[in-house]
Image (cartoon, rainbow, N blue to C red; front, side):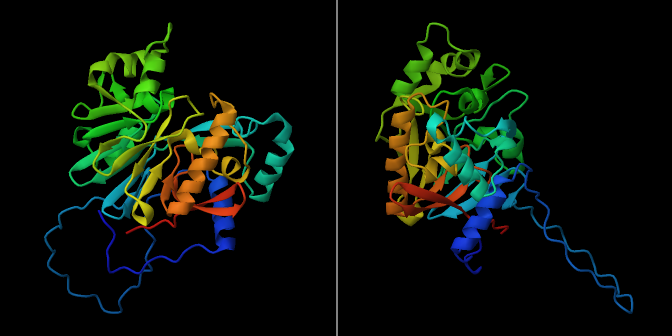
Length: 338
């Protein structure tokens, strides 16, 4: 559902508000509740005559709620659909892995009041609705831990309505939801993935169970694509190597009416942005991943794009601002209920 065009626009976050919001996000391990604001109730002095019940209105899809967040961007609707979260015992050194910079990273976490231990890792697939197309970007963990299917249902999105699935890279938390009980979860969808990335995982001598079940078993459904390719009208792949060698992000639209869906190219929502050269322990090539992040962050800011990162704290959608040379800050969008 698109926002009411007559509704007043929410103001931009001021610097202090940005910092406060980031602090709240860093501490947010709990799932945001979907309940509306409570209304004050008054009791009339004289009981009113009961009104004739009106015919029930046709139910509309909820705008935002437990496990999903919709945002109108230009002519498209973007819905972040949470696959849930997993316990994370320690943020360092996993999300800021440079061994000589641990004290620097720890100081930044303290500055922003971001918990360094006993926190959670978020997983955030994205649905893009553009014209008649409904494109799912990444599919979560699958199995008993994945929450994508349940949260798609809460958002009113049926698996059969997905027209295309785009996979940024072959890690298990991005491909696990491609199948359910051995069958394609999104049976009506075209499946798209970078050729180099798909071939890397599918040709391994001993592929993981996730790769066997979700990539190799579905090989006939996949269309393999290249960096910089327009895969559907308004959707272009963007080379973002380093996290994996063939990692692709996805650009939908352009400028203020566009969004960069980063997958894991974004890294950590605070450390990877603020500290040039920072890398993540599970980046395939940490130095390359850090250089890629600098390039893509600069593009996002320069072009005024929206941005969503797979492991950013839910609702995982907003903008970036430049703090200084090589340093950026994530500005989460202000939650909108309607």
